[in-house]
Length: 507
Image 1 (cartoon, rainbow, N blue to C red):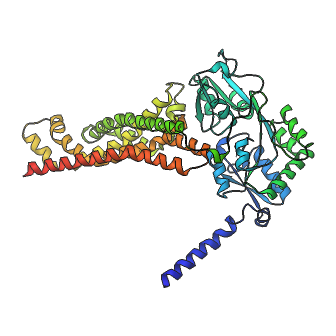
Image 2 (image 1 turned 90 degrees about the horizontal axis):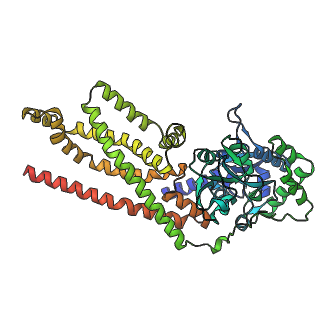
Image 3 (image 1 turned 180 degrees about the vertical axis):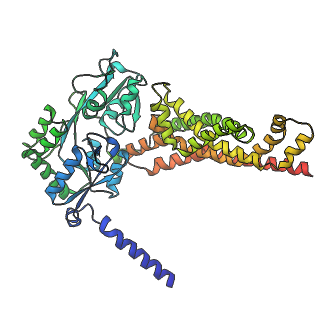
């Protein structure tokens, strides 16, 4: 009885602490009572959206930062930024991590079916960027070519409607970097991004005119009419008194496209403006009509095959490399031991994600690796360092008497290693090696940052399309299990076999 009372008291305390921050956060009156308007965005979007001031660490700047602050002032509250990955902005809003999304959220029928959207605060144009010597003239001429863009954007929807190979990126600068290096043939993104990251590069050129046109809006929870009304009124006021123009002009964003925002004020009620001028709006169905299709299942299978290919290929590098480095760290000379120690500590002591960035982007001026090649090499070198320590420990675990007996029989140093030490150490290392392969299988999900669409990346894409993370997540987990479990069982059988052979010899 006492335990149950303590549990009830603890639960009540947790609810009491969490209640002011979580409960009724979608209610306008609560926002005013708490005195803050929480807005979600992704710092990886960079300049000019929201980014850290280079001259003052920790201070956020950007045109959307100033818009958020202006909205807060007009609502009589403080604007508080919440860092959230771009792909998680809408789920984060729905689970009440913040009150509004203000981060280049494009107005689409799909989002209007899922969220409450404000009137437009910015008009963008989709810009096609090519290499300067390229002969392509439009999207239609790029048939079958690799074209880069960002995930969950109107640009991505437009590219999916064409017979192109769409290459997805996490950040805004990487697509143009790859375009410069010849890894893609074009990039389609909003003119805000193209003007700052693509058109300014001497090797690239941006086609004049907009491939399509759309609008940035503020996203709020579905049915939150009170908050939508005050946000719309605040944006309208910013348009009327010139505050929005001042903010956009400060970041060199006010242009002829923004006249549509002024024209919108003449309408009695905010209505979604045409998504494009040169293209029809992307065909998006309501969320309730979306189900996991056979085509998506096929893409899941392709993602699983890519994950398996990356894992097997990289472990084919890591395993022999680990054996070699492990031997050299035990049997090598002073210089060799020092050199191999530097390799092991360097790759164990730095993040795999950083190593992938360096291999793909950092050394591209010297060696231009393809995304799959960079992924396999990065995973192989990283896990090779871990395998080296596994095999070094396994070699040191072999009793010293084995070495002394081999030398007493006249075997040389390398003969002893080959015929006596290695067979025993490899058997001892097998459980750890198996565990490392399973870990590598899961770590292969990191290669999506260098445009490789493997199983986990495919799961996130499908989850966003379906607005459902449970079914794609369970399917993804099941595929990982189907790939890792047979290997674990095979390794267990090998261990039992080695143990049985050892007992037979001892008998």
